[in-house]
Length: 440
Image 1 (cartoon, rainbow, N blue to C red):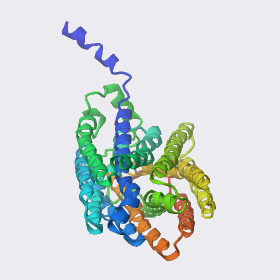
Image 2: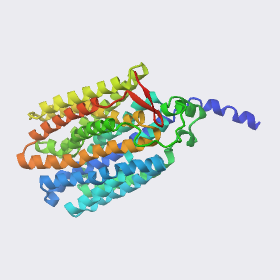
Image 3: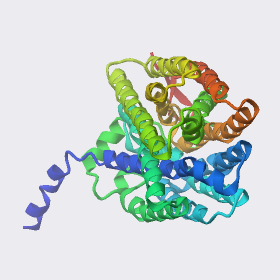
Image 4: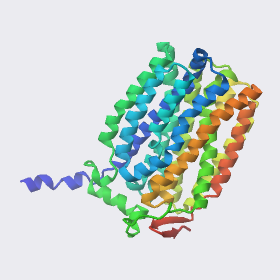
């Protein structure tokens, strides 16, 4: 009797696709992650008046998040390789929720900087954790989708977070209470992450043996038959490719973080929008970014499934992304109509968010035991852009009193993003320790 009760279970689990629940969870967590970051940018028009902050000081405050965030990317990647994403992500949620909440208790510019440094430290391992999960949960042909499903949470978090935060500040008439509420919500998500996430498919009770076998069969490291228990020496990829990845990602980050941190101020000062309209415009711009992000990942996987090499598929998509972004941003520099400005920024966001494909690179290029480290180095470059660009924009604004030069600077960065991407070598993919397969 007991045998007959148990026999249907393999058939019941045969069609499980729980790996997409994992990446849907990461999508949601990344959305909250970026919502927490955008709160300060949305609230800055109020905060700068309360604390009498100059543009340069505002730039320092907006930049301070990335000081610790960039510094801890490589240690964060090491923690992921050593302890696994489940523990690291859960701890990060409690940490960054706490610092987000106490920003509401700030008394001036110095305390804002200190709390933002704490927030950056706690958030440091979150994005690289997606690359780590991709290497263990997804097959070779699914990693483009996995990268963009996860990373599309970033622009969606900005879009929805921007409109929620803006309207909460107006409704509660307090940026401080808004920060506290967002921080508490984030800490509660730590329990959700611990319950849902696992480091490997075979550790999750809701994943069938058939799904584990499917993932292993389609995983370039596992399918090679090479013993991956032998630690990889160095990065597992060439330093030329690593530097190209870092240049491309940093240049992309200059545009993304520049618009994220100073975009609301641009809409307020250069285009004359009020706070509620800023929230609505931010929503439109970054929803378009979310759609562009998702389109790029699904389309790249579509190409790879039909025999197109990663080298051609990724470089083609990302070159289009950079060239279109450069053109639109350069044209935007002289636009004075608010509706046209929001429209152009929306189109630019759609194409620039193809850059989320970068999160597929660590799992595609690096051996499994170096995915966290390579992802950490890549995100460190992105984070260094996050450090520099708010300060540079503040200095440019203080020197010129206009956003025109700022937008031209963003266009130049989009050009470097294209060049960096074209220098990445996707023609050799890791099969195991010191072994590579040439991709035709």
